[in-house]
Length: 414
Image (cartoon, rainbow, N blue to C red; front, side, top):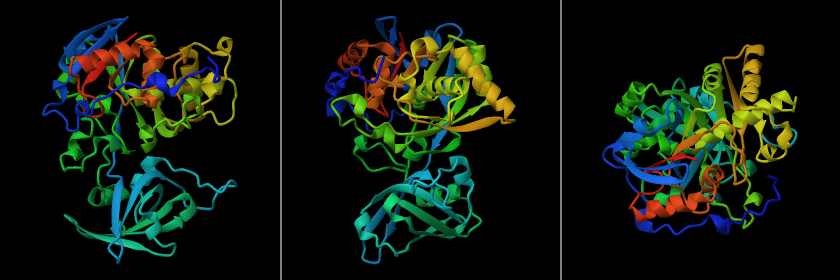
């Protein structure tokens, strides 16, 4: 497929009644419904049935990112509330030649003590004066914590945060100061229980501002059943950004600017993938993005392309089909890179944009929720199952499935 292929936003819309949006989770994570699409046929099950429904030898890949309380609120002396929605940590040193600041690995930013610099979305920013410092004092189990915010680069919405006691890590500070950022389409206030329910049971690496929601259904009991079926799994990390909710506004969906997210691969990830060719099932769209990005980063390594760990939204469509190597070769190139550079893991950035016509390289199927009309996630699903995505969604609507982040699940095996 080339990027000039005509893909219209109207092709990926469907009618989602408001009452079908699951605004709260079920009392039990694995009590959700499971729609199973297998080679064109659709059946219905419960999520607890998943281990019995996966193909023999399946290897599941999860995203173990952890949602951070990314919404911070400060009250000016006038009473105006300024909201800072954290997006990306940046290196606060000198700006680069293009005026931008280099990003930092999120894991390092979470360990920072005393101060940190983040790019964010600023609510009520017109009220925040260029030289004004904002402050909030928090009562915590460790005593009072004071958090200050000032502009680092107002034009680029970059803010410097500092706090006392300075020996606290940034991860600790935002647990006290921040609020979990629920998806805007839930249209409700965050509750204290969302801190647990909007988090997978295996979340580990702090840094996401949205949950990899396909994983919300998994429980220790489901994992035990997977093990009893000898179905293996692994965890990689893609820190889900707010761009995942950015609507497509252009009628030509190819004109949409795809967001970039930070992803971490380990040697163990690559070795496990090489041991399970043709058996990989992504748990969630973020896992699929990470896996498919890995292939193209391997291709960049093999082609000696510049910046192989930076993948934009166009690269996957620019390599001629006859120059696209087998998946094992591309993953092997990435593994060779880690070995050659003596690294156990690598931090990369992906802006991959998976749309219909994309040739899926690693994922033989996906476990995923039901997504917003006209979203980049619908386009990804359509790339995997073709025009049958509409049949799948119609079937789900007709059978009272719950939609979006806290909704029901599907197993798609094209």
